[in-house]
Length: 194
Image 1 (cartoon, helix red, strand yellow):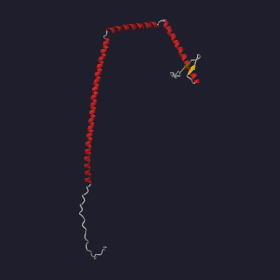
Image 2: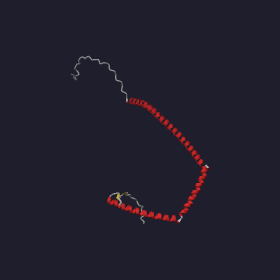
Image 3: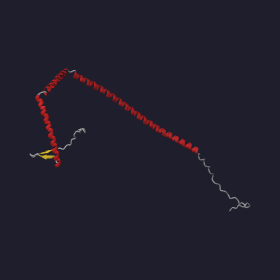
């Protein structure tokens, strides 16, 4: 036990054990050193990544450029071939047209056909003025009007029949069965002024 008394005597020193020699710790790097090291390491990594990605981008860019060049060459060849074929077709068509235009027998036949066609038109107009033709035209017009009236009346009767029986066929007096269809038609609009 130790006392604070100045007169107290000290006892004999005890033998100190010798500790093994300790290697002094290396100094820890400071903030600046760590930052420099990280920047240097990052630059090296970035340079490696940048070099790899740049090479890949260049390779991809070269591939796209080669593909584009090949495509442009193919388009140009096809366009030139199309122009050549169009020109050849134009020449062949002109040759064919000229072949028909220069044939004397065909020319004579066309001239005769033109004369005959003109004769047909003349005769047709002459017949239009004949009293029998005029009478027949009037009779045809009257018959068409009668037919139209009967069709409208029959259609109305068939609609009524369908509404009553819900059937689309009817029996005739001689035992036949006739089918019919119901169709709706939109009539022309009447002006509001009428």
